[in-house]
Length: 418
Ligand code: AMP
Ligand code: GLY
Image 1: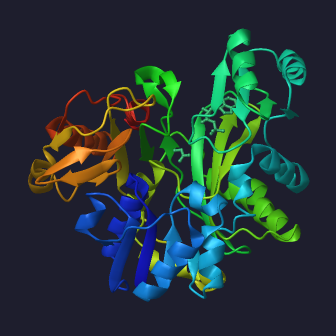
Image 2: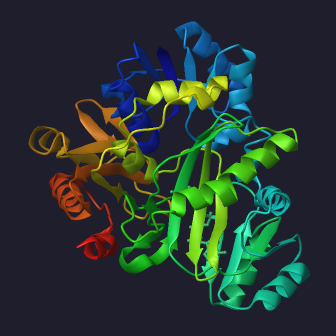
């Protein structure tokens, strides 16, 4: 199978790494990719938001499966263009991707499907926002209605800050605060059959101890030793299947990856958000544990034949990923700094630990930083404690001037496991 992956982050590197290990994959292409992906896939330049250009590239390469990684091309209808060109594509239509592209749309789907989520109001002016904030009280949760790369949400006890964020957005969703640990649960679906993956936990805040601003995600681990073993089944029954059924019912069937961001509250599981694509960095740990070759599963989702697949197989190993980010991330990051230690990880720490690239590019003989999140240093181990040790040992070999990473990824969970 010839496969083309669209995107350039560590999620796409994780996808490409798994695909490169899949015996069914005969050729692997990625556009636009990054310096790390270049080691496992042939890179191509393309405007990832231009559906016509992506479809033309897929045809030119003879791709038999296109996988669209990020949300922006999906919302822009890139999967539609590829599908119309007759190439199987893993990723929802632009209309179905509204489940991520518009928080108000997602709330409507959940209401109709009876899916448990935070109570909320959609507000379009300052007075509506003030009333909604007053109705729920602190802590305040204010979400930009549109796509904001994980940075459009403000959770604060400060009423003025909540109002200021609402005023900075055209349309906001203001909702009840959900207490309790968060879980990211991904499901592969062809619009009918829903295949949940293993749950993971992401670390959204920039700093240790969950301090600092929200980011795209600073690390992740899987499995979750503290979670109820029945969690995945429960979420399949109460969240994932009803949502996929409702999307089909309203004429916008969702195929691809449905990502449920969940809060495990004292009153039960609640959906915080849906995403229309693999999560980053959770994909790095989920795919590290997936034993079933990836390409056939994603192709079955693209072709509507998921029901025919045998159950997915998983490694018992735990996986941890630690994000190394640029100076000043999630603000405007500093870029262009050389990255050292990549070869040392490859020779000393592989195969248990490896570096997935996000914002990197080649500059002569150097690999240099080219974005906010630069690397996802990923490791597996017999348990979270070992996976953590291996991941942080590899992080310690990496040199990147001014970089930052959290030191407490999976720390609490590793303690609970012990
Ligand atoms: P989102 O972009 O919707 O995933 O929100 C980003 C982060 O904000 C989430 O991962 C949560 O940590 C936090 N958040 C969002 N909605 C809520 C809520 N209703 N209650 C508490 N925290 C929330
Ligand atoms: N890690 C959060 C996300 O992918 O949206």
